[in-house]
Image (cartoon, rainbow, N blue to C red; front, side, top):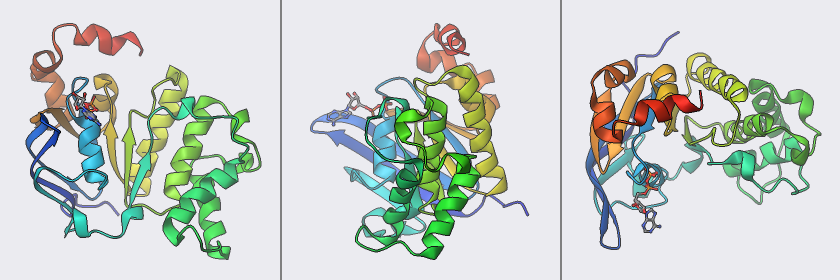
Length: 254
Ligand code: ADP
């Protein structure tokens, strides 16, 4: 069964944000529908990470409104519905003596509460999350013994263990080689199409976003584009936003 992409999960209405006096986002509006795979691109310092932090409820807009599942963000309690995969997974502290299963269990605690015991059902969800990312056979491995690509899958499983409805990823393939990047994006595609998981991917890599996502938003203080990824690439806006060297830079690491 395919979904209609018309149910509003996240609504951003005229959001502006300033760190002290520096205006970083100005009058930004867009909607993420259930089932969307939204890529957010834009130049460095354009406000992408700030936008994610606002969606996650970590920052409050200076003006404007954010609604998450129809509820104003500041009153939205079901935080585990928004799964987050951090930047630079490959660079995390690898010597932390935790197994794959323990790291994924941490994601489950986000759902049930830190001081609750995990029950049979929770362990079944942890197992399912490991299977969904193809890491079930590695459950007893120490995370320090994994490749960058495997570690990234574990962090996806950790997010899935909280049973999110939206998965938010901030530059998830920084420091990961091209081969593992391909596998990683194939996994995201599967999560989006077979589990109907809504995805928001922040990336500086236009080629990947144009190829993988169903919607594209370009943020450079304001929303400079929101629509079809293919049309963005054809529109000539790319060079306007990033400057004329972008194509070379974008292809450099493919
Ligand atoms: P992007 O993710 O697109 O690179 P960011 O949202 O990280 O952009 O940053 C947007 C702007 O806000 C940048 O100019 C950055 O220097 C500034 N900024 C980010 N975080 C902070 C902060 N904690 N305090 C002050 N300024 C910040």
